[in-house]
Image (cartoon, rainbow, N blue to C red; front, side, top):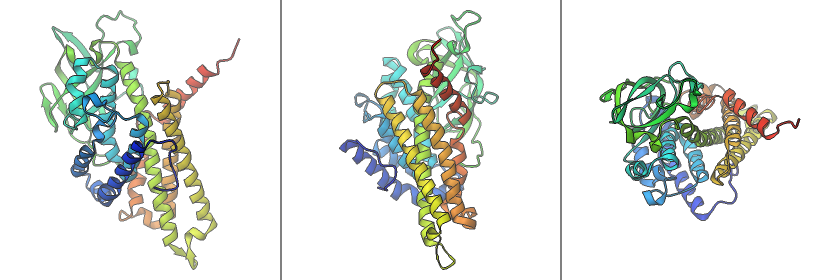
Length: 401
């Protein structure tokens, strides 16, 4: 365990879980991550290893076959996994968000149907809000679910679906206007549909097409896709919670914990960048001594380590706030914003320490340099986080008239 980013007050079970995950990362992920990433290859063996460790059921209650652990435990595991390869943490994250939404908002029948299989990794989750022309304006979605007899027909195009090909259960947000008078606010006329499908690409069930993988700058290995619904029929018992009009709140609850996850990813990538930077600085010599002995490099290392420590502390605080049952959108937004920005800066400083070698694909920092930018936009851009933070601060510090 490194000196940085330690977490006080963990139980023996939490420490044991984290030690197991760190050992798995060091032995099974780090040695192969860069090679797999350059080939944009799905990490099948790594995912099977995570299933064997029980990580797909980490936060699923024990009654459904999971480990029943806290958001903090999950976030710390994500931090460790992202330290090895950020794409692997993405494979776990979307699954976790769908399982969390089912646990919090699903009907008993939905929980019984999906959570045991999700805990075992047999059913793999993904969730879908964004659309090609949408960006962060979730309230402007155009995908529709229209009542048709004893079910719904879904039409529309979704974008940026992580695990779109490998997943077998997708939580899809659509507009449903049934029972809502004209003029109802957009966020009150949305529903989340639980869409079961076969893994793969093309038409994966009648009315549902996953066209193929989107070619990305980084965040490779994990499949990011579109999702096209054209007359997709869904039974009424696959509306999350059994009632229409609650989809926006359900998704935002999932995204709130997802933002803690993204903060944890930023912490993990930043930790790895610091490890690479501080190691290289002691190996590389200029002017007759290691560059780590030059004050300019020591200043960089000091700034990098401070950012790693600060981001970790904010991430842990946001997770603990959610675990306590309190509202944590302010803390989650702050943690996601700070951790992603600091991650980018720490990775760039490590890149600079490597000099010309940082530009070479032989060195791991090149991969991190392409991965870090995704965190600036995933689960809401930095600008969206600042809007959330600002609004919440004005609620908390409302001026007295």
